[in-house]
Image 1 (cartoon, rainbow, N blue to C red):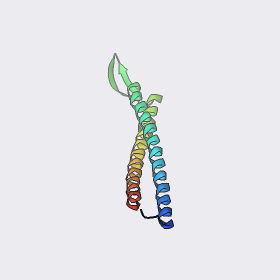
Image 2: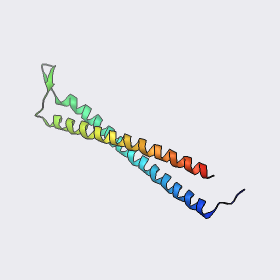
Image 3: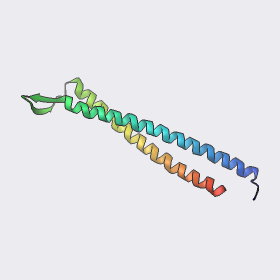
Length: 107
């Protein structure tokens, strides 16, 4: 077996640190996905609470109620966080796969 040079060891350590950093980014992105999903679910629930009903017939959404504003904030912020989390997860996942491939090339 060949001995690793110091340069190869340093490169391997750097790649492992970068891999760990990308893994941490993936975990961070999943937190955004979970929080965004929760807010979207809350927004969907508040859609039904914001509906105006007369004689058990739905007429439309009341825009002057607190339920409407909670729905808008929940859906808007939840959607943004969900998309941001998914994009960050995909980017970090692709970068980490490239780094792992580079680590395997060193061996």
